Structures are given as structure tokens and as C-alpha cells.
Length: 198
Image (cartoon, rainbow, N blue to C red; front, side, top):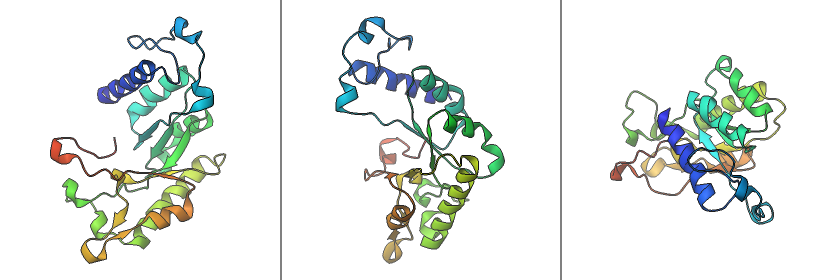
């Protein structure tokens, strides 16, 4: 939880430092009146996309209230394992944030060392599509007002199978979503950074 709070603080500082999308004092996260009177060129020239993965409690406790305080919106990619634990996310979605699909099971490569969990290497295209569509069903039941949503690849990995049988599931995601978030950056684990979604 503390790590996520520092990440959000750092993000706010970087946005402030770059004179980008909102005006905050980087130490207090309070509006900076002097900067607020300056022209806000970002409105006509660009945008910042904020997203959070996995639907953690710290996002509900820290990120959502902080974003709401400053009138900022983000996408929260959640794993709707059961519909009973989703109630707080309905309010988040109704307040203007996007609730995105991050699958039900959050299946990643076995290279992460989670030996007791199903891995992408042992998952078929049909199985990953079923997992994605089950998450989508839960999210539609949660927030029918949101008619479209985007997708985030768990662990930023977009394949199933291994070796000669490795296949991309990008076409499956493209069939069901207008956009998806991922990366082609290699895993950073070798430098001591865990690249799992946080």
C-alpha cells in the first residue's frame, strides 16, 4: 500500500515538474495557485493516460480519492474473480473512471516462478478467451452503464503455449476490445525489478 502511495506521489510530482496536466505543489499535493493562473496548453496539445492494474485495496483507498480530488480520471484494470467483491468498483466507474478488463485469473508466464498456478505456457487460446469473456461478463454485470472498455494483458504478456506451439492472443483481444494495453519491453526481472502488474 505504501509503495502505491509513493508511486502516485511520484507521478504527481513528475506531472508537476513537466508543467503538464495539472498544477500541484509536489510536497503537499495541494493546488498551486501561482501555476493554476498560467495557460494550460495541454488541453489542446496532448493527454496523459493513467492506469492501475489488479484492483488492489490501496487503489480504492489512495489512488481513487487522490485522483478525484484533482478531477483526474484513470483506468483501473481489475480481475473480477467473483461478482461479490466488486461493489466498491461500481462507484469508481460511476464517478467517471474506466473499469478495464484484466482477466479473471491473471495468468502469467511460469517464468515468474508461481509453480502452483496455471501458466500461459499451459493455456490454450480457447482457455484464455474464456477467461477474458468471464471477466467481461462480471464487469458488464457490475457496470452496465459502461458499454465499452479496454483490456490490459496480465504481466504485459500476450501469448499462450510455448516453443513451436506459442501463439499470440492479440487477435482474440482485438476481437472483443477497441484497445489494449501492453508492452514489448523484455522482462526486467534480471535487473531486480519484478515486471508483474502492480
